[in-house]
Image 1 (cartoon, rainbow, N blue to C red):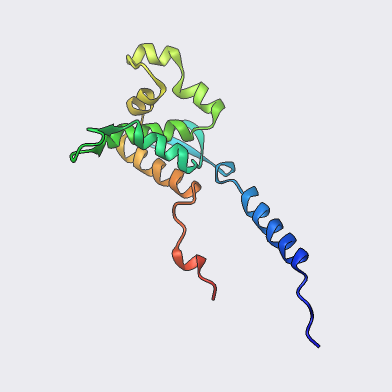
Image 2 (cartoon, rainbow, N blue to C red):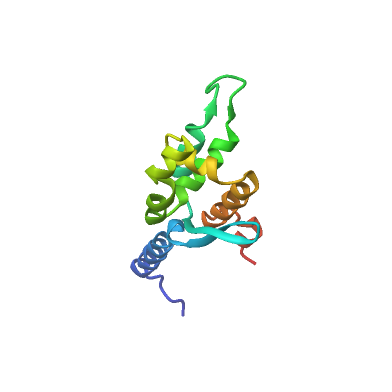
Length: 146
């Protein structure tokens, strides 16, 4: 004897699964990082993942020749903005919005501060960490049911 499909239970299960999937926010995961010079830890801070809208904002705000055939991203400033946006608020206030340091380094924004302080390799590594926290490194094979 065949069991009848309980459509209410199926819909309830699907809804529960969708709500569970939505409850995992990529921006909830954080990673403490350190900045070292000559083997000495100079300072540390924590970064989080960015959602797609935050990545898009960073790209949009760092386009050169927007809408033209020669459109490109100002990579150095883009990387600095990604790091700035991904830094958790209390560390952002302490580091990138430090007005005393702004005056001494002659910078006008938190993004400029990131650019003035971090080396290119550090910025590349941090953007990679933020990309992982943002779930951009998901392998297609992980999504295939086997």
